[in-house]
Length: 201
Image (cartoon, rainbow, N blue to C red):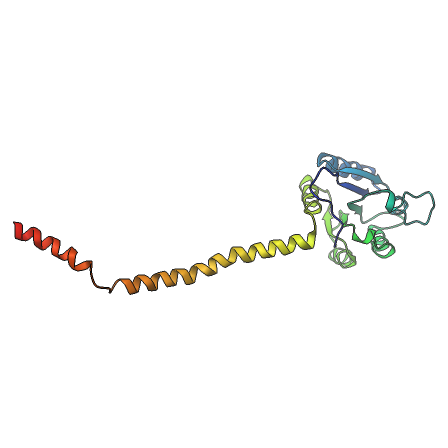
């Protein structure tokens, strides 16, 4: 289950990784527009250093920070986004729970499948749009993902139950109406009324 924050006053912290200065500025801007705290680095090795996975003593380390989402470019020199993803998912049990989103300007299905199989939360095509960032933010802020999913499933079941329950009710109602229709009075009284009018005439 991915580590997520509740929809309180706590700020969403995103680690953005991209070797392109232009793309890095774009994603920073989109995240800040969406009221996210952003830490941007230009390589996979810098990301590992920030996360405390490089083995250096001067690294910040996961205990000294709170990252709720990692967004990384796929094609980077030295270490690709896929390699960074693998290191994050394999090296630390704590970091393994953080959602990782891969970004790329190339739509290569084999690459997408490989990243998703390795544990990427999503694969976004560049240029990343504001709607992508907002959707990711709402996903992270949703709370406990699995519990929320169970609630949604239960909600769907509850919504389906009235529909399924309505059919027996309607059928029982129709059967009741069918049983009531052949029942004796008050139909004779209705026929007597016009007869009484005729006798008066």
